[in-house]
Amino acid sequence: ETGVTQTPRHLVMGMTNKKSLKCEQHLGHNAMYWYKQSAKKPLELMFVYNFKEQTENNSVPSRFSPECPNSSHLFLHLHTLQPEDSALYLCASSQVSGPSYEQYFGPGTRLTVT
Amino acid sequence: KNEVEQSPQNLTAQEGEFITINCSYSVGISALHWLQQHPGGGIVSLFMLSSGKKKHGRLIATINIQEKHSSLHITASHPRDSAVYICAVRSNSGNTPLVFGKGTRLSVIA
Image (cartoon, rainbow over all chains, first blue to last red; front, side):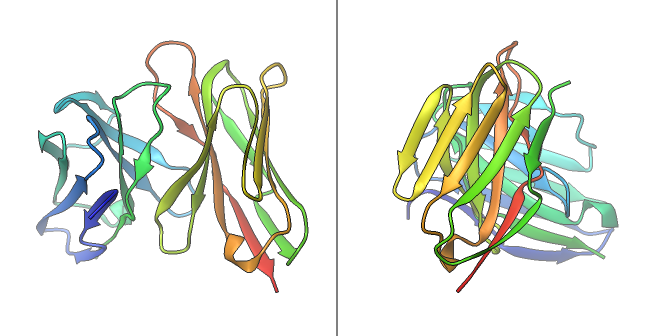
């Protein structure tokens, strides 16, 4: 497989559930990102990991918990979410985190919180 | 605050038409990206530019740093070009994340 993959592609969960989103990149990159895309809003950066270290947390509520066990894998652990958290969650990667490096996006996980 | 404005928000074109999508931003930048998002959600990076003009197939991206403006042009548009086109910029002050526009939804009708 090549590029950036995300699983699952669709997820429906209740507010009391715990679930995890997975992202994997096969590009040899060292930076990975989580973005949230809500309806009719621009993409919002959530977290940045550079060489497995979290370098950015964009004031994301603690019910979203990222994990980066290695440079190829990124998880987003979800618990006690709210209906307004329903959105498309996109993962991206780049060679390293920086202005000159192009980001490659995964297909996204469409999350519905009921 | 860095703001990115795109116009138009929605665009419908006939197959074969020349299309222009505009992006304006408010701060000095180190790079500007044009992205394409298909209905399924996946995003593809089309261009990353910091000056001048880039061309790839039927797509052309231009940027005017002084005017803080970029355009994405599609020549000989085709229904498969139907997607949301997103402009994103990175400020040149410090290590700041990409800021995204709301996107332009393009529909090309056969």
